Image 1 (cartoon, one colour):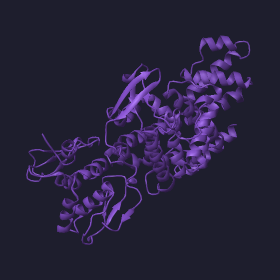
Image 2: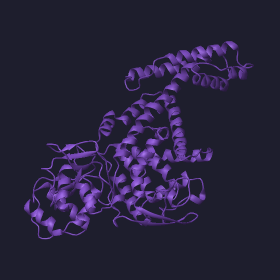
Image 3: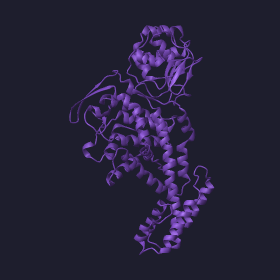
Image 4: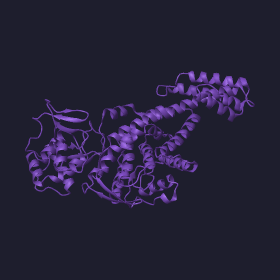
Length: 517
């Protein structure tokens, strides 16, 4: 297949930019067709053999939509006069204006002696194909930059079928609905479980089992999500200090040295990802924090949270604690967007741990190709020499495709609600029902009853022989049988449909539970 458009430019100019999600190729078709992994183009529509870089970029803008990394780097290979001549021919043409806009932004200079741009303002990103951000209009070219960031740092998220469906399912609205219809006692216990589970899950992703002090420290970090503090270097460093229990790893600011991620091995071959150099990391963090603090309005909260969370971990602004903070930022972004209410937190890290291979794949969509852009040489012990082999503007770090990250985070949020928080809430409700029934029938020590009930729920309604032997001198034999029958009856009740329950039913259930208590 003959590559055209963005992929032709990338290969012809030997660009640093990563390949497009779907490259365009000449195929035996009668019209341009979009497929999952490529764009099929009839020969009569494709740029000809004599076409230059600008011809292919104009074709790509029309048929492949926007790829910032290739556009910004590719435009540095286009002569100024070539862009000017094209624009003079059609000063109202959308693609000619986009080309002029990107050429000036990329080359950081202005084209001279041009007529005024005419025509309707053209969006950089088609809102029907991309999740878009706030409008940033350029009057000179009558172009509206509506990306998720700026041309200093910007993520792109395509409206794939998975993302469209996730937005329509409104998982955050459903989560808030679950919480608002819940008895306050159940809600408080469910949230306590969610904070602890999220903490443990976040540590387990990194292969750690948190002790009591680490666990308490990270719970304190998570609780700050609902404060909706704007992101600053000082604030994030303060959180990093709380999340990291080793005082030698605590940071006063963003890193001043190069770091890397590595698997359990030695030497340069073990290095799996090299984040941007310190100076660039500071610049990108400033841009990411500004976007997160000031430009989330109108962006789906889970998409925004994905961009902030994954963007942070790819920049890796600290020597340690980046993973935990990136997962905190997912929650913090949702809270600042007003998407989570009443202290709600979704145990997303629990879902991520259960789907660790998918999490790793979402990270490696970016980290693996970026590793290939570095020559890493092992000197000794933990000393390495790093040489970046790519473009001096580091466009591959500035303009990244967050589609896979958004798909993954949206899926994890839904699993965190439906497979984690909802199941725990339902367990608490059923536990209370069983506890109330047994407590009315038998006067047992409360801690004994709790152990027996939890054990019976875990065993499908059976009190094991070990538990019967353990409590035989404090619990009547008939009580064991009563606990079994009660738990089995409660487990057999219909699952609670949180989404469909009207408010009147909520109140009735809450009153019933309160009366039984």
